[in-house]
Length: 400
Image 1 (cartoon, rainbow, N blue to C red):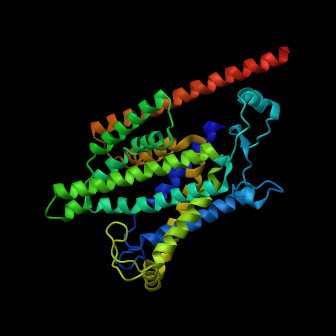
Image 2: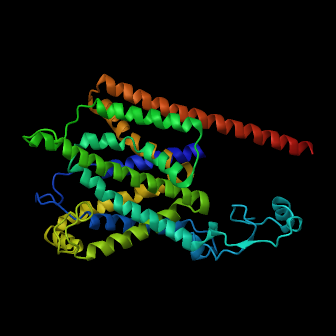
Image 3: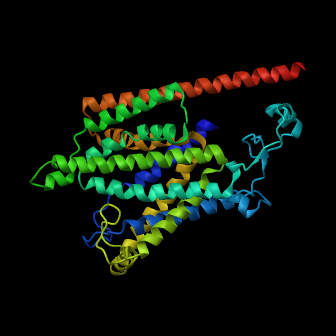
């Protein structure tokens, strides 16, 4: 079942975000004017994504399940003794088992200590969701700003190393440890994608149109700084999502609903305020609310509504697969899927359109496939070991 779910998630992410990445010449087919309202674009997608998650949860809702529980919200936590919460949502351990697990309170002469268990605290959970929304909202401007200073291939090369900040942030923020083979897989995939993109012949369109050629050293430094900030925030986002799944045991659709709801609230609030010109954060002209600019553009270019709706719709469906992957396989697997998407697209273009790859690109692809094979082999070995243990346990029970 896990392999089938993983395959479905991979196909879903690839297909939805391949549709998202298809370019078009003009947003309304008649004009060369550009739609310069990224906040409005993000608001449309996050709104539709939260509605998609809500619809999915409603269709999968169990009969008689309270609406609050469907949304992944918990009742107020009860005080626990000496940290006896066992980390599971059922909490059905009896008092005698808790006493044995924690030792006798009479032995040390102290009364039982009561403290709040924040594992199922709704307020702390919502704050985590809001934290992710702030990260996501603030990361995008730095990514866009980086493209103004560095070339697109340099941006892709930087993004190919995203596995590294995700792992670093997991370790630094939440002291999470990974199996030894995970570090090897991350290194191999990062190296392979870097080779694949580095040996490619793709050139940035700006460099072709510019007589000055490559960006200056100062511009590259500024662009690299923005890119590193973007990667660090992305890593913090993914590691926080892993922490939410580990601590609160919510579903992927519940997380998708709340994070997108908070993202919608944040971007809506920012887009209606006539902010001044702020580098990176609010690069558009000051004094005019972005929502006003976006609505005016759609009024004068009504045919732009269709591609914007397609963008929001495919993004919402893609997020369903993204959060399903996050819930069951973690952020490292998700980032591996999203990073290898372009690699597989390029390999598919070789088969379909007879495109040629440089020898270094074939070497990079081989390194990536080797890394993925290591991950698959270890997982298969773990699954086999678990099955052997389960069979032995069943045999032992039968003998009793």
